[in-house]
Figure 1 (cartoon, helix red, strand yellow):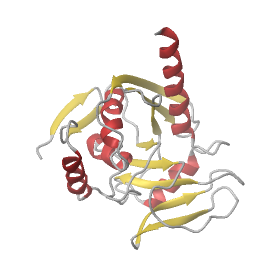
Figure 2 (figure 1 turned 90 degrees about the horizontal axis):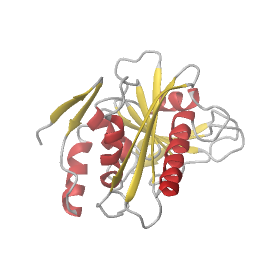
Figure 3 (figure 1 turned 180 degrees about the vertical axis):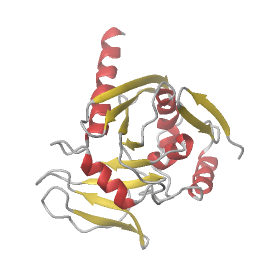
Length: 239
């Protein structure tokens, strides 16, 4: 595959393949792209900006709403946010959700003026049957550190972590460590953290804990979730 690079302000996006593909081609793309992932920390430094990304849509509706929110990593205050709305044609197929969600998310990222240090997605990274969840797929397109923070497990086995915030256990699939099951608040259900691209499990856990602000869901994806659902409600009221 030949990548075409397009520059949007400070965001660099690599368009690696078409999105209008059949099931077999989509699976083949996932297998091929999984071999390109970098699953370790590169040059690590203190996080200054961390982004959260989320998708919202109504059941049986092909209109998708995407939001990206960039936060100051120290204060967790919102620095920048963007959104996009688009119709989706790719069918709902478990394991291939990025083919539905990534195109509209990329349109939201194209509007971001300042590049974050890491992006957290409401979804999976390599905690996926073919190691190509939304966070991994988007990480290759964005060419930057990405991670998944999911509310539910897709694949893998784990032991229940301790009840205190910061407790976590390994998420293992087919003998491979693919993430961590992390308690972000005392006595609440854990979240499922997995590397997407250009990051390791330990760094991803640290990033999630660093922006856990009294809620189960870390602040970047929580704010993206709030924004995208507000957009969906406002659009419905206007239509």
